[in-house]
Length: 197
Image 1 (tube, rainbow, N blue to C red):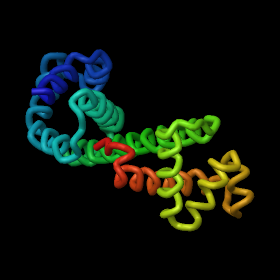
Image 2 (cartoon, helix red, strand yellow):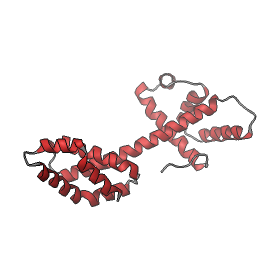
Image 3 (spheres, rainbow, N blue to C red):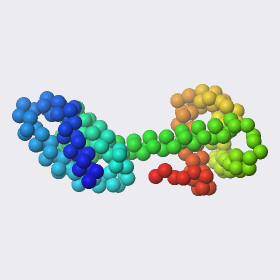
Image 4 (cartoon, rainbow, N blue to C red):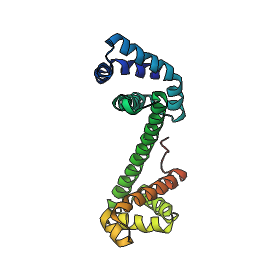
């Protein structure tokens, strides 16, 4: 149902109509018919792909529109549009979940920074959370413990962490994301954070 709505929306999307008009010297109804036939042909595979990657309904249309726009823009160099579209959709689904994980890691990072920044109050819940967080960090590999200690205990920014740990500045964000991913998995395993997907 949702996929059908997405595919219908694509057919009336103004950019697609303009690109389709440029695509061929055929009359507009025949161009739209050929796109409709193409979309009807790929529908089962697109649906299976979205189910496989568990893409939420509210994000399917955006991903599909991006992929179809890319298909239309690159149409001259594409030999097999169906295979190209499926490969592009697969990549866009992977990128979608990578971005979702990155958002989760950023949220964990912000939460930990906020927690660390709060003055030590006598409230039991805050103290328990700090202890659980410290315990989760202590279970990480040494380089992650070192990196997160610089980040959270000493307040270093990424360029300072790179300099102190001997990494290139371009590598430190990748390492930070890996360490935040490991920390997030630990927090989920301890029940301190719910898994997002």
